[in-house]
Length: 504
Ligand code: MLC
Ligand code: AMP
Image 1: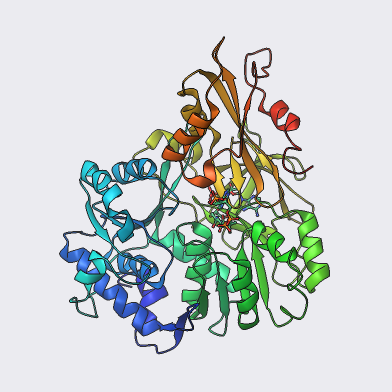
Image 2 (image 1 turned 120 degrees about the horizontal axis):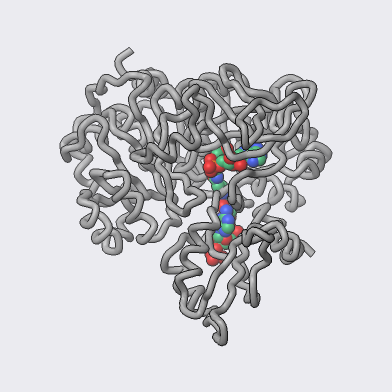
């Protein structure tokens, strides 16, 4: 096959007049039209000097155009690097520089603030809006509507997704064509996706869940997506009657359950509800089933591995578990000190191996070696256990990570910033339970002796540096941090002390 990812997900639909995307304004995008658009983008990216293996950094609002850039990258053999639209210019600078992206695509409203970012990284800057305007769109219009697909192999890189680390520095997870394809194929079968499916798509398309899970499976099956720009309760209620499946983070489901319009009749025709990216509370699962008669299918994955486990399509979907390893995925529970496998039933670190597991972190061989073993097992940083029937439960994390509304937040990144603020001696950032986001961020500040930090000034500095979803919802001053006898900060104590901040 000339280009496995492009041919299998996109190319086979090139002549298809079937609908791919349904838009909120009532418009539709057919497969053929989508792929013509992608071909024009592939032509332009090539004309702009990008060659197979070049990185294409994009910070674009969710739209058919933004998705077409993904298809264009696949067709031209370029590495797609999508970035959260909430990232600030400071955050973006690191990604563009670190990845060596040759081009940064952004919204036309952001070109001024991002021009210095692109210039510093030596990247070209082009703009593309959700309405199809901007310099990139203008230049693409004169490109041919077909493009000679660049030959690639399964082992060639298709995408970089940045994921933060415990040291505070983000790492570019390198995903191959084979990683993405193998997972899409397994999930399409496991979840029985067909061309008759209409997926209600309200997730962002810069992360694994919305891009590689939801979109790739739909493409593979030849189905449709109702493509909402973001999650909005009214739009969800309005569109559910036309959908057959929904994929969401737990916040989607808790928000739907809070709305009286969300009842059994509204979703009686639905085939499947999938949840992932963060723990779905067992009580949410139970409440959802009682309300709708549908058992949410919970699955477990991550940026570096795509999906690892899933509850069964047929068979019990067990609340509080993430189901069984997917076909082709090996999963074991190991002792975090020795790395040895633990007997069934014991709690330990989750390790996975399979065609879904990434190639490593871009230009970070030491980090890669720490997490990806020579024998191919990836140490996920999640703690879990396997029951007698093979169902996996995630019981905690071996990594200092907060998941808020499905977004990962690494405390170290925020602590480094807080520590650098005037009159701050040190800080600790923790996640505490939150009714809407599952967890949310709280910052604890220890003042320099004899000083009182200016909390408002600190908040302003955080706003300048970090995406909104990473901002601590509360900053608390404490005279000192709890430490154990070794001097290590006891975050567990802090989490217990502040557990009721947002829930009681
Ligand atoms: C938005 N805000 C958040 C937030 N999302 N704050 C914390 N955590 C979040 N997740 C901010 C907004 O900027 C806003 O700030 C305020 O919180 C309230 O906004 P909102 O309107 O209530 O939120 P909303 O925009 O509706 O977004 C919530 C959400 C969204 C849950 C719909 O965050 C979302 O789509 N999350 C999905 C993330 C995702 O796709 N994760 C998959 C990762 S892949 P202000 O200042 O304006 O009030 C992965 C692998 C795997 O993990 O297994 O899937
Ligand atoms: P990310 O790095 O954004 O891909 O997030 C991956 C992390 O999300 C995993 O390592 C888990 O900690 C968490 N995660 C994903 N799915 C689930 C789930 N169903 N239940 C609990 N945690 C999950």
